[in-house]
Image (cartoon, rainbow, N blue to C red; front, side, top):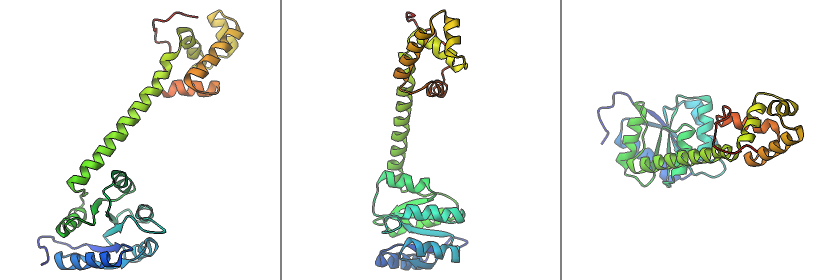
Length: 236
């Protein structure tokens, strides 16, 4: 029985290398909704050509296909038509795959093993302008996102902590280097020899894990270094 209550119908293209699965989805959509399947494609390249030719509202994209995978196909479709709404369809609930599909522009992600009614609901939601992720997949997606974000924060904090290894004198030298002052100028301002300045600079390179003055200055700027922080350390 066709679902009622949807005032307009979507024109749907199915891209799936599994003929039986594609045929099953086509019959399901045509029987259980008022949407229309306008075509099917057995691989990504044919599917992309049909998208260009028929301009469907929604594409049901198999993610795992030989030669050209669904993620790449979504990217190519989005390049020439941002209005096409793509639903990633796959047998895998891998959070990384969900993240990649959504990142390149998929509006929904659904498993092939899910109930037929859920697919129709996903199509209705996405056609109406929403996004769709089943709750079990949404939890995995956000866990992946939060874990990646936490890892990035930890990495940033670990990198920023490298500045804390500098002695007070090395901070003074770095401070002057960020202002564009030459080694000779640093020596004059700090009342030390130019040879001592170079020794401090080499120590700074090692502690910040950089190879030259430019990298040291960029590292300091990138990590928010704004001059001497008056740490309680003995000057050397």
